[in-house]
Image (cartoon, rainbow, N blue to C red; front, top):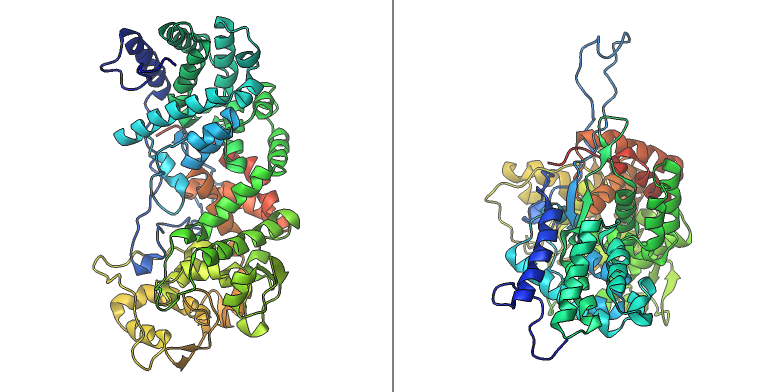
Length: 588
């Protein structure tokens, strides 16, 4: 670009040329937007002690039976009720999450461009980031972020053309003419917008490039820069479009490019690459077999490991550890190195179970081994291994699986005291999909401190004698008491406030236990756990809290999940080929 000249920005006050260019970008944007309407999927609210940790909202509920009501004639001569009908979630558009935006830029334009990317933060709605993507309309400040981000990305991309040249060689090799602009719009545009561009779209983009070249006194690369800016400001890049097309049944089938896009973001966290889009173009994603084959291919990529880790980071809430704090006087060792080690311990176990051993994910909840380094060894009270090593921790600590990892225990605690309520609520809602009623509006959100000469459990038992508290706390606290042998940083202890700890319990629907190890075994064997995990994966990936209509599809996925050894990778493949994943209802 020529020094001192205005670049792309607000149309007002710009030259006549750039008012035309801005108008072209805006026209493309308005054409792309149509009339996106936010989905009516349930959203969550951040709440008090009884609502769980940090950002918990409503959980996927496994209580729905999916049973339809009908008369005997409609259900046949047997008198049995009709089979519940599968109703997929509504179609529409979903805004890219910030990490999806950045990683898509990395694929399109390289590391330097990804480093320059600065999209707006994700809306904070519900338990999972994806729930915020259903709120389609960005705020004015978000639009400014997208504009400045696309400008910075484009500038970085033309500063290092190596990645772009892999998609469009003419930007390096020439000829540097209108045909090359067309190649950039056609080939980079197909990757960025996740489908082929039509002639009108290609013409608008090449016109922008040619106007920019003319404005900058014939500088070819300036045209490329502004073409990239236009591509990245378009709703076709910023939104995942899932409208579908009429199929054989009552609902809309995602077309090949929409399936490719949904699978790629689900399993790799970024826009589909050229090979994946080629499968869509060749009709390979129109069958269950083709979709399963692509899912298996994507799960073999290193990016799938990061996607699964992201799910468990959100699911277990441990991804928020970097911002978690503890009372420095009570827990002076709770620093950045220890928090990083806590998170890595959990992710190492996830990677080992899901990818290295392809084992049952139930192992995550009852494993008698874990991974520690010297920082964690000090917390766990064992000898330092001199680096990361898989170990068995002392039997008396009753550690078993991720619920006894310091990462989860620290997240499910306050800064200065444990929270049996948070820990029990997590088990009930996130692991077993039992919905707990919201607390009364005037509940005191402050943590409960054990009274002099009492354990926290004894103080909470008195708290539960209040009828206004007992109805909900009785569903959560008895489960949370199983973890009282671990302090707010996850360190093992036998005394609380100078008194012996009682970690026993007997919870209806779960069973009797003495300590976290026995509770972990009960949870791992609970038949509700696999189905609840499927529902959480569904919500974390698409943003929809399952409703009655989706239960039959998710139940079928769960049945196969159980039949194939409760292995995570097999469940992910089965979910991608399910109608609940590949179909949509009318957009709302």
